[in-house]
Structure formats: C-alpha cells, structure tokens
Image (tube, rainbow, N blue to C red):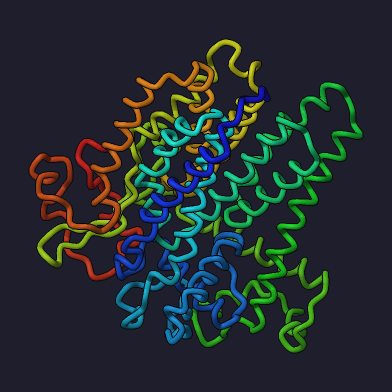
Length: 484
C-alpha cells in the first residue's frame, strides 16, 4: 500500500479525543431510556441473568457478545439485587415481566463503551487511509451521524462489539499492507476471530487474506505464505481459547431443569459435563465438547428461524438505505416517542458510492488495500444473499459491508486529493439527515413540525405500548415519511 504522510501526532490525538467525546455523549446520554427491552434485548437480558447465576446456556450466536453484556452489567453494579432467577427463566422476556426498578443502563453499559470505541477506531482507520486529521474528522460523521448505528450502540445489542473488532482487524490489514510484518497477521487473525465469536458472519472477512498474502503468493515464496498463515491462525486460536475458557469458567452450574430456558439448554448439554459441574475441573475434551454444543445450538436455531417477517428486509434494499425498523413506539404521554433503526440515507449512499468507484479503471491495481476491502465487501454480501434465502434478515446485518464501503469512499476521496467543497456538502447532508432522524431513534418526543411536515408518521396507527415491540406486526412499518 502506498505510504501517506502521517499528520502531526498532536493533530491525531486531538482528532481521536474529539471523536471519543462526541461518541461518548451520543452513546451514554440517557442510556437508561427507554425503560423496557429494545428488540433483541429481550433475549440478552435473560442471557445476562443466567450468566449472573453461572448457569450453562446456549444461544443463537457465539458467546462473546452476550458475555460482554453481562460483564458490563456486573461492573455497573446497578442491578446487583435484581431477581435474576426470574429474569433468566425464559429465553425471551417482555417489559411487563421485568422486575420493578430494573436499571437498563446496566446491560447497556458495555455496548455503549464499545460503540464509543468503534467510533474512535473508525476515525483511526480514516486517518490511516487519508493521512489527514481534518479529512478523518469529516469522515467520522459517517458513523457519528448514523442513527442506525447509534440505536444499536445505545442498547444491549451485539453490533458494537463486532464492529469494534472488525475495525481493529481492518487497521491490522492496513498495517500488513504497509509492512508485511508477522505481528500484523497475528492481530488480523485475533480480531477477525473475536468478531466471529460475537457473530459468526465475520468469518467471511477471511476473503481479504489472499490479497494480504499476494506479494508472497506472486513470488511463490511458500515458506513466507505458510508463516503468515500460521501467524494469523495463532491469533484466531488465541481468541477462541480465551473466549471458550471464559465461557466454561462462567458455566459452573448446569441448566436449570425447572425453567423453560434450562429445559431447552439441557437438550444440548453433553452428559459427560456432569463431572465438570461436580469437580470444577475440565479437560481439552470437555472444551471441544462444549464448543460442539455451542455450534449445535446455533445450527438448530438457524434451522428454525423463519424465512421472513414484517420487519425483515433484503440485502439489495440496504444498498439504498432502506430497512427502517420501529423497535418501540409510545404515545402514553400524548407525544410520540419512538426508538427505531433509521439508516442515515446520505451515509449509506456514500458507502454504496465507495463500492461503485472500484469499477473505475485502474482503481484496484493501484491500491491493494482497496482490493482487500472490496473482497471483504463482496464476500459479506454473497454470504448475506445466501442467508437471505435461508432466514429473515434485518438491516443491521449490513453493518460490516457498510463500513467497508465507507473505507472505499475514503480511498476514492484521497485518490482525488481530498477536495474540501464536495466533501463539506456531503458532510452537511449526513449531519442534516442525522439530526432529522435523531428524535426518532433516541426515544425523545418527536417534534410537532416533523409530523406537520409529513416527515414522520404521527397518526393513530402508532398505538401506545407498554411492552416491547419485539418483532411485532406493526414494528416493521416506516416511521419516517420520505425516508426508506
């Protein structure tokens, strides 16, 4: 990868500090609102309860993300006296069943921290790609102004963990293409594995590896290729060992056979784990059996996931910023309050533009990093297209390709010498759209002028809610008129 002059260190530090400050306020302000489960929080609150009880459990995704949510709640100390046995009795819980006084900021703490970290890592990546602190700050608006990302960062969801690890992996890939050091491959393998241990789909970023190895493949230096593959595999293995070890140390008691969740988990718990529960000692064989049980539950869950529902959308729609999901709407105080996943149309179209620029002559030949990013984007979209034929998908499944598109857009801007005027216009559009969608994504009262101008639906079809709108029939309707 061609070297770009680094900005002065104090400029880079100021950029990252400013992004951290803004992202921290966006993620942490009124973190406890709404005081009800948001979307998949209905599942992650119950998994948090079972982790606090040290009960073995299995879920739709690998365990790293749910463990981090539980760790954040534990560290916050906000729910130390909660009735975790009642919360963890089922796989999914509604707001009405949650104990009175439960502080939702507890399980949202770790996602908000990682959401802030993701914004900082994105700024650092933009700095690497452009070599300019002002340019990186302007590009950071693509994350800071995207209410689709923000709503996931402000609730107990898996996306902030996975995206942080993915962005760290992209920084490692950029370092590899600059210097081809073995340490870069170790870090790339480590962070890809950590991202996949949050959601398995991150594994498809392995499509970037042949591009990273291309200088050695072209030279047919098979020893160098093998060394780098082993380095990456070592990083991935380290992540797997650490996460599985943490999961087994948290799972000191068997599933509770008196609860529906425990009865479901018992089906996948291998019988030979009895001695682990009795002695607290486990072997390599026990660890491999545990990994097999985690994989078996995930495969079972994929098999029974419905092919569609009212909130689902398709990969081709996300390219154009479509896929709004209304997570929760409340009119109980006379004003509409909502929290929903509202993509920033301007930002998502910029991401698509970044991908399309790869079709321009000589773009891929002049930049190995651009080729690696495009390979990751294509692999992700191919996997999502296949999954779309197997199960329902939602717009947040697009987040990894979204960020890859942003990186490609940054490379195209740098290719043209970072002209300011068009970038400022696009930045203003991103900020404007973010401000417009801000109240619709943060459970604040929707301004009357948004309703009167027809920019938001404030009619009687949005009924008051006292329970979570998790995947309900009306939750998939668009809440923003004119916004896809």
